[in-house]
Image 1 (cartoon, helix red, strand yellow):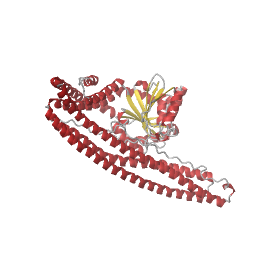
Image 2 (cartoon, one colour):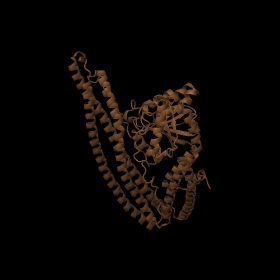
Image 3 (tube, helix red, strand yellow):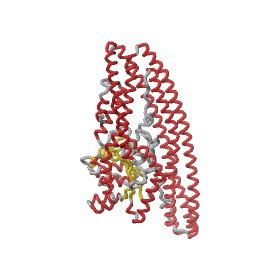
Image 4 (cartoon, helix red, strand yellow):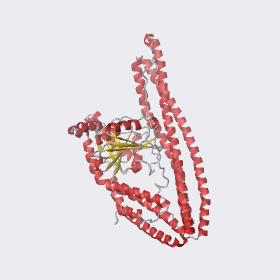
Length: 591
């Protein structure tokens, strides 16, 4: 049976004189060849905020390269691969020239400036992605690591989107920690990740904060939740590590501490399993994508071939019929856009209502706490500390849940619009196929409608500080009863400011993400509809030009097209023949 590399080479040379539409498809096949030749397994590092994802990756690299304890503004993908020396490249979404940095100190500073909340608020620098090369034994085994934001800042508005970063990954390190081992938000996120990534390793970080008994309980609790709620195999292996100690051990070349940290064991297992399974996983991904691209090539080739066989008059009539249909397709797209605008407005109204409810509920909780503080006659420092802790805990609990609600709402609404977008794009292809009397080749369900850039959730992390906001310089001179009343008023005012700031930031972040998701969805639909229309128009136009200027060469064009179609059909059969054994092997990888 031909191997996938041979099949890809045949596919890339299957069309001797490709049209513009065919060139675009062949370019994607070439990119698949490059990925296969590259031989890298893409491993995403995933998890909730403050679980220690970046510290874990730093520990695996052996250097404090990636900022830790800092929440990225957006899901700026950070790709880390092996290299002879440390260097990084920052790419911008606005077309500005990329920035490059070399050496660990320069890279650390560049990452702080470009992906940290403090130095790049709301991603005002328009950073699109960051690529890092670093001399690492772990990466040198053919691994490309991708650092991601935590749950609550990344929004996969459609988990089947082929263009999303996670959709391009082959494996994942799902990082959890001992405080607590896993939350409901993480379980929901894990369910989405499972749809995109075939191989997941579970890492329980920060075990140095637990004693032996607590560690055993945390590990058992995590295993029970993974099995009972996320459908993970009962034999799942959980890697208990202290990424912080592992990084220090590597920096100090302390083999004993490295072993105790659990990082060495994790590295050894990853090196063995990923090396053993890398080829199988990558081949499966490449084969499925190649089959889809060959089907596209075949469909476009049949359109162009049938157009060449038609007399000029018949060709012109069919082209005119298709243009009439195109007007209907455009009207359908505009109708879909109008419905989406209504849905977007409705969702934003729901956001306002939910924000008001959160504000009122938090107000009531603050009032109860202030009354408790007043009854206990606390001193100002203690009272402020107690209120600050309570507010911080309240926001840390409320924010992820609030965001998850709107992720679900948005995903539900876009799923409906995606079905209509799928139907519209299928109709364009079906219309062209009917006109030219060829068998229709519809895109695979997971690729029928593809958003090229998946919007990501802007971070909305709670920050509470009540120190000195309303403290008066003469308060210490007041009588105690007056001081307490003044403290109560000041605390109430400061707490209200903190609540207003945090809930306003939360509302702004969710609103921005809702709007961003709809904008990119509509942009992707317009782009793909234009592409689908243009591919059929090009088939007509190319045939008309050849009839008009090279009528004597039509026969050679027809013969070349027939040979190309025969080659593509054989390639598609070969790819389908490989599907069964590849699928069987994948079963042993992902079970």
